[in-house]
Image (cartoon, rainbow, N blue to C red):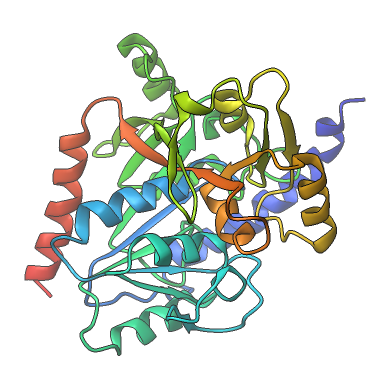
Length: 340
């Protein structure tokens, strides 16, 4: 018997619990808190692999030249507790890999972690100077805080419209949760995705009136980077290497880089690399170049030889409509800031 059919009764129970919770928030029986600052929530309905990190970085680049920006994340698998504001002593163990990546790449913004987003926002707003816009990373289901703008991500080839709720599928809540989004972004699309297929996907997602739907793809850098410099990807073609990834869906990363003779090492998402893991990577590498994802790099640097360890940066790019998306975000933030 199909395992999914066995798990369906549990999915109905999970759906009932999340539906009741959402209903209570919708009706005001559970309190949602708002703040006098623009708050943008980026998240998904599924359990991961939709590209939240590059999309959050896109927003940081868009906004940080105009406003004082702060990001607030839960800090998944971090070894600290409560509210933590990134400082000079921050690392991936204290913040979690993704927030530490933000902190390392964008030193002009504030980066904080707190599982209690209400408390975290309050702490950020007590800073001087205080942030003018806050980005909530992976907070679509965190309804105790009511963001002013919601961005829902869904991956091409793994649309929420085709998925089921946990545990039979990968959805954290029912598909109707998409109604809360102001913008829906279909991520990880083929760069050549046709307009006709985009129309079919829009129809499948059943966007609500007023909801905008955009399509993005992952743009890989032309260079791999290390603590000591960078190397052009074309220059490393044909050289044996070890590819390491501990992300939700590593196949595109491996497909982009791997060649015959390469060694591919896969670890779970947000993997906390043990000494045994490091020993295995070193043994497999045996002086070869080691290339990993940017998210994994922040956990591996300092533990592998820096002359061997490289990462491949990525960015989120819009297939079309990028200017309209930018204007939508800037209009929301500008209006909210002016009316504060």
